[in-house]
Amino acid sequence: MSSDKATILIVEDEPAIVELVSFTLRSAGWETFAVSNTADAWAFITRRMPQLVLLDWMLPDQSGLRLLSRIRGDRQFSSLPIIMLTAKSMEEDKIAGLEHGADDYVTKPFSPRELAARIKTVMRRKAPEHGQGVLTAGDIQLDPISCTVMLQNDRIDIGHAEYKLLKFFLAHPERVFSRSQLLDKVWGDHVVIEERTVDVHVLRLRKVLKHSESLIKTVRSVGYMLSEK
Ligand code: CA
Image (cartoon, rainbow, N blue to C red; front, side):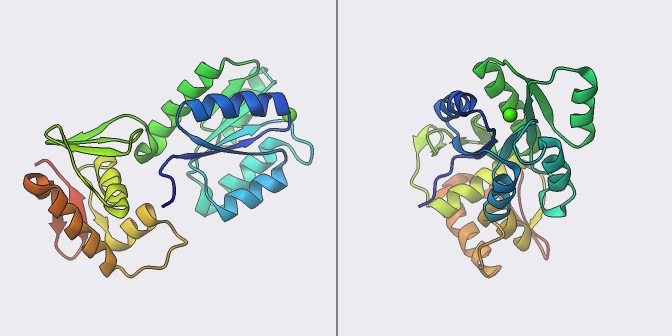
């Protein structure tokens, strides 16, 4: 079973900073990977899309800004959350970073706690399903840190796929998703499964949700949604 933790890619060539940042983020519950140049960063992103990238400005092969432009120029990655991490504190540099599509900007030296807080804010804004706050709807409570689901304060047994599906629905309430969108968002681009599989997992999910199953609505000829209405 793969980990449900959100993956953060650290692109930074100073080992001491990599160590500090990795330690801080792992303690906060994220999975981290580190690379020290833009070529390795691009290779990582295209192989395994992280949930967020921390990108240093000054890197040995190319500037982080160039990589930022490359990422933003690719439709597949255009919404990938990116925080620039840099020693530059000049206002014009900050503006350049944000103009190239960075979601936030942290100036070195920074406090690890501040960095973690910024990451949480960006993730909450851009990818609520990777946030770490408890998600709720009706009697359902999902805790992404312990990966548990409570139904009226009773912990329920839930399969991995159903858990991911529920987490996605809870993070995007009142919105209809087609089967192929759900496959894409919940299972990822690299998995080949039939759209009917989504129906099977929705069925299983409703079963474990017992009396709360009605929160997962079928929208005829479109797909599914979570709605409290
Ligand atoms: Ca550097």
